Amino acid sequence: MVFLGDDILRWLVLALGGAMAVGNILALTRPRPPGRAKDDLPRPPLVRSLVMIAVGTLASIWA
Image 1 (tube, rainbow, N blue to C red):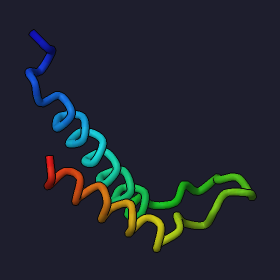
Image 2: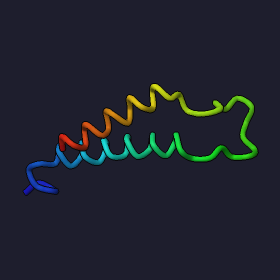
Image 3: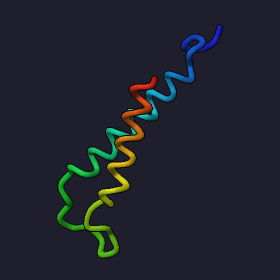
């Protein structure tokens, strides 16, 4: 018997896709800390974050 049944790949895709989507949404919406380092980006790259949100959402829907 396999842990989580025979569809473990779907569970893994669901977990990774959901984490990718939620993590990027939180990175875009969180407020900036007041004492951040000078070499920090002012905010995450918008286009890359939107692409990662879309990929993560599609992976979660597929799973």
